[in-house]
Length: 408
Image 1 (spheres, helix red, strand yellow):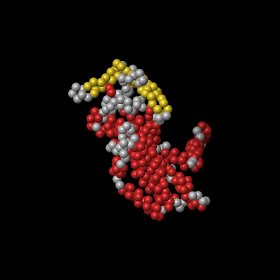
Image 2 (cartoon, rainbow, N blue to C red; image 1 turned 180 degrees about the vertical axis):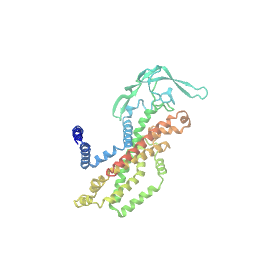
Image 3 (cartoon, rainbow, N blue to C red; image 1 turned 60 degrees about the vertical axis):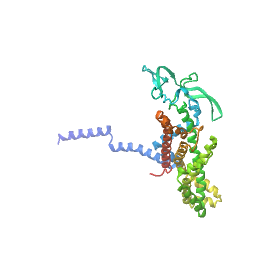
Image 4 (tube, rainbow, N blue to C red; image 1 turned 90 degrees about the vertical axis):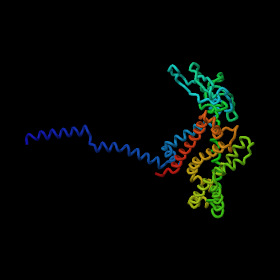
């Protein structure tokens, strides 16, 4: 016993010293758990006080593809709005020496391997002795630097402000050489400049057509769902009749009825109205269904008892209650309008030259010679349409998910 007592005392001293240097795991874990709990409480407080639109934004930004689609659309619409500034050349300017020229590669490394500012090589044109096709070869000894915010051909931005500054180009002193990012067509016109100008018509016709469809859909669908009875029956029969007709033949028949000698502005609004007259039925069905479920809600009855007019009840109370669903539906409807204009213009029943739209540019693909010798005439406008449609679909999916922020 006398031998074991000092050992027990030493063990107790060691345990006490260890306890002072290393606190128990239980107390340490409790301290670490306090911080996440505080963070979770703060997050819950934010959710409780957040508004409807803030919740929608928090859920929308989690949809990565929707953010990518929104970025693509912002770039495309900025190009369409400022097409005179972005396009390096006039869309109707002819480069006789560069008919059917392939895309011009931008380079930052010269033939010696030295890193430089963006530039292009001089192009020499020759003829194939067998096919008589133009052949373009690069001359490595002559280079042309690509400048940004360079002076070029004068233009009027939106037909109001005069300017001659372009986003990029070779400068006004170089006339025998051009920079064609997407190549040139069979008349020697820069395809990239024409795509920029075409974005203004093709993208705007989808927005205007959808907003006209929205107006018709809300008015007729709201009347149908709010009043019901014979009015509802009559409007629904009209909608069913329009929806039974195939869309593309109906578009073609209405477009063929437009006078061929109409100017560009009249033809633009004519095609827009045709696309809207066919596309409003889906929106009207959505609005009618929502109105049928909302017209007996407490807030609608309260507004009616307060003496609000029926027009005010519809516009100020019922429509805003499902505005997020309307925005999502509109976003998913715009690609259909763009494809409708593109298809009609491609078939020669929509916009016609001298108007410039992506559908008009795709008409060049109908020429077998142009398609065989210059495939970029098909790929460039088709790629623009495909990217736009995919971007709108991704954005619409994100908005549709964000429209109900409480869903899991």
